[in-house]
Image (cartoon, rainbow, N blue to C red; front, side, top):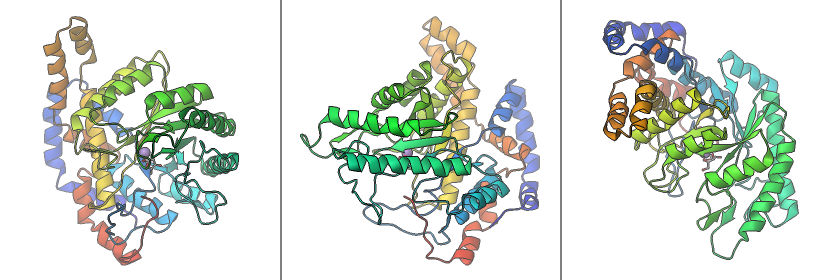
Length: 423
Ligand code: LRH
Ligand code: MN
């Protein structure tokens, strides 16, 4: 299904007058409004190719109907999200869930839909049918060199797929770890992983980045080889300048101060990117901003400050969503996640960083808090709508999605039982 510009123009018509009035009101209150609208209208988030169908848990999976069962259909669905939000012009592929059989054809299709390829993702956390050695006891850390070599070869193959598609980065997340004390020698596992990553790093083109994603537990429940930002940072430093730490918001123990981790990584230019999602307990992979919107706002406050004060030359982070959908229509869920991310970013851009610094230097805690909360309590819906409108997007993407009856059109095209690869 493709959404055409005139359909969006039609859907925006009834919303325009009120929107313009709201914008006029807002511009009276905020003198840097144009800068914020401009920043958001040039902001894009990569959509995970593995989150366009029903995820499911070990207790069950409930399909949505009309799910994309091919990479081409997945690109079309991301095209729908981008047509409405004008903030989703990138795709993050997971291999082998989404192998581009004909890379040139896939690249052309993506180009036609206004999409490009962000970070590639390798997968050495599942055994594939035709696989010689099992990853049951790990991959890059495995005690058996044959298994490590197999996993290194897979990561090199993923880089090669990415080169063919125009991607410029690889994300490595490892399920490697242990379930029981004594099962694993932590030091040997770390050193094996580093040695394996060095072989993968050596295969990177000079203009590529390697993102090392950490996670404290699951699917292993005693230890994970790359358990936290510190371990990821150690590995990245040992590898070289093209290696960075990737922060998946769901990969933290309860009450972890993630905005502090983000600020700390940026002091050394080591923040490579994000997997945005939200959670209440574990790696719940829920829609962004549904549980902890203030934390997300505080993370963007550190990003705004960090990008404006960047002596360590931290690159612009890779912005990616990593979620799994069990109840909500995946496309609606992703549209809401984009909205939540841009909301946090716009509110953070409203913060008067100069006034905040003055309050901090004077240890005027009350004023510092008021500056943050005034920005957080500002309704930025109109800013996001104007940013979309200036890119010919929908003023209200969710109501547009429903007015266009996208899910039922997809069910007519693909049937009720088509299933998407992924989580
Ligand atoms: C692991 C993870 C990782 C992906 C997977 C789909 O929890 O966050 O980023 O490879 O989810
Ligand atoms: Mn992730």
